[in-house]
Image (cartoon, rainbow, N blue to C red; front, top):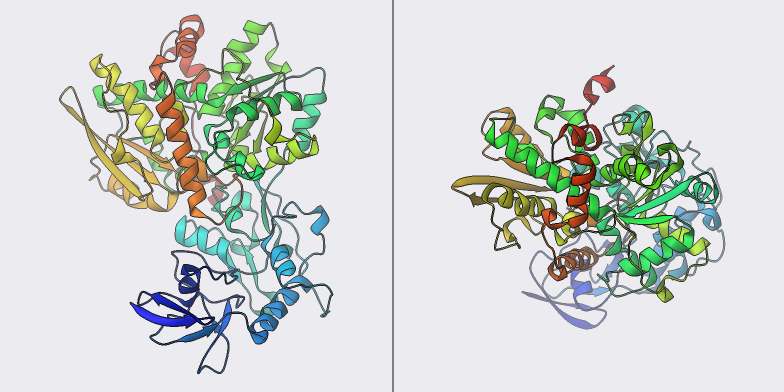
Length: 575
């Protein structure tokens, strides 16, 4: 341990710790823009500069290690002027459209402008002028709003290991873009939206579907149905200053009904349905020397990744549609007939923590008779904006329940939203299907947590089923390499593109606090632990659906409605 002084406060710090972290340990806040926790510091933005005794220039606190006896000042006039000047220069090269910007009141540049009392334009000159990339079905990229902090580049390259965007050119002409400035739709981007979560401005944002959804709600010829993903209920409360990890399911249902939706269903119902299909598919592959390991198919970002990078391995991916697509398919077939409606009269909206599900909902493979299973996808952030525009005070909403029959679910479905949850839910049902008895220990700790790769072995009637959970698309490479070289030992592999799973999806509330994600995860596991039924095969509404319509898991009807095919996108992109 070393001892230094920061703002005349004695601070003990570990050797190798940066000035920034040492200051944070005693409650001293130093602003940052380029800094990313756990990644090697770049010191690029210079907003975190401090004065260190004995040093002539200002020092970037995010990149400079502490030393014994160091004396640091973080709030001198010189420091404040330097930071304010940096903010002023960024603002002068930034579009002056805060009032109409999607990140208004949730913009780090705006916050810094307020912090350093920027009240006038002191600089003038040429501004960057770039076209907005709207080519993607999920995301928009606005280089004019980019402040070159590099956080999106590092997230895409170092965490997700995709490398779809990077810096190009120098000086004033520097920009962040795709290779050859092509559209996101034809780049290597998997549309996971992790870059949106780290972007301090609105240079990266989701493509909004709010107008289309509200038009459908007011269209008297449409029967509008909305479904809600498990991760949304554990995160939406953050936007209303509710305690972290609040389960806001009841208020969420009420709010959606007040928006004008005809029915409010739970995607968790379809998560249970997914497990029935996926567990059956796994058992069939294991019992009949099928293609192993089998990958889960719930994450469209992962599906897009393997289609683009390793299409030869697509036979390893489960043919099951993702839960919200299954629900959409059931709504436009079974439910439509039950309600005496035409499939084209039903407009299905999915509230998702994810940006790539917007792309997924438009896939030609996810349709029946040329009708898409899901008509529109709204992120958690978009839903909050709709609530505000409609004058709905979320904090004062009474609790309500999902409509039936597609509103019932089990605890297994609730944990779909976190890394390892799909695997845990699948094993609970696979164990029962193979043994006829229930798995005693429902909390499979080996597949929980934030490790990049989690593995476990479960004994099912003498068969050792080896499973793995890939947490974040950046960790999938070694698993794919093992399959390609014939050394893979796994039977079943879950892959979630976003670190932490859907609970940290690209459509979730924007934050820079890891503890928020942990609280969301805890909320989902708590929902599971309190449920009467915690195994997907115990869902009586799912059982009824099979009895009345699907016959049995993996039946011909089930394959027609609930399963899909994939595309070799490498071939498409190369052409």
